[in-house]
Amino acid sequence: MRQLFRYMRTWLFISLLCLVVSWSLPVQAATSVSSKLEQQVLQILREHPEVIIESVQTYQQQQQQQLKQVRQAFLQDLKINSQSVIGESPTTGASQSKIVLVEFSDFQCPYCAEAHKTLKQLLVKHQNKITLVYKHLPLIPIHDQALPAAKAAWAANQQGKFWEYHDALFANQNQLGEALYIDTAKSLHLDLEKFKNDAFGANNIAEKSIAKDIQLAEKLGIDGTPFFVMNSENFSGVVQLSNLEKILADAK
Image (cartoon, rainbow, N blue to C red; front, side, top):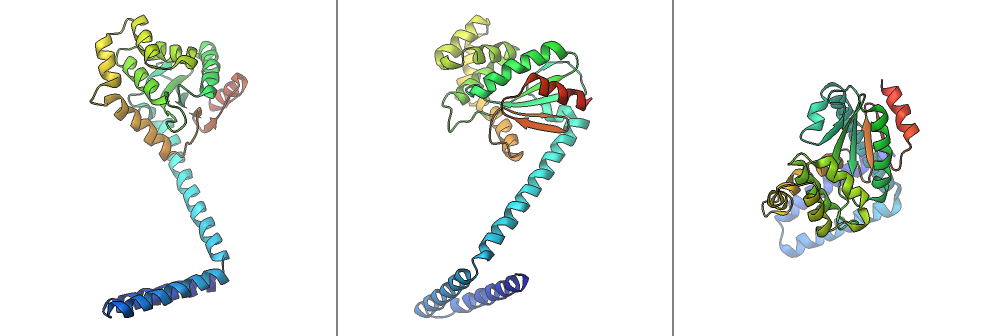
């Protein structure tokens, strides 16, 4: 296989050299050279299809290694400089804690709604031991109200009411829509004009902020919700309170 790769590299080099030479030839001659090179390369690939498979596998391994390094760096930041990870994201629980739980969530995701109930129980039992950080990850291609709901929650956060608004959205997940967003803002006594402008104004300030969370999720290779990171652990999907408590105990 290594000999084949060396041969391929040599062949590609010669091919490129020929292409350079062909630039100085008349158009018809250059086209002929290019066509012959294409046919010869295709013939090699037909005779040795394993080259493609091995190349794909090598690429996937490189991608996985890069992702592993990115996640390790993120976990390291979470341990030694958690505020850099938290940023402007809303938090609840202990104001200062060595145990930080980062949640990537979508207000229209049914699994997130289930996880929300579990997290509420966790915080009731361990509110002085853990800091919960909320990161927006609206799954826009499959949830049409995920981004509008996230923008509304972001706007509520600008008036110090994120968690109340967050709870209301999950409690009324089957009613997500503009009417719910406005009614919830009213029930929490938010400044309605500011809320509307922050959430849905022409400046798109909410969407720009949420995009930062989405970019972080993409960088970490997160493709589903809910997704959690706590100290040296990451886990996704519906989680049980007992599992969270075990991870919490191990993290201590």
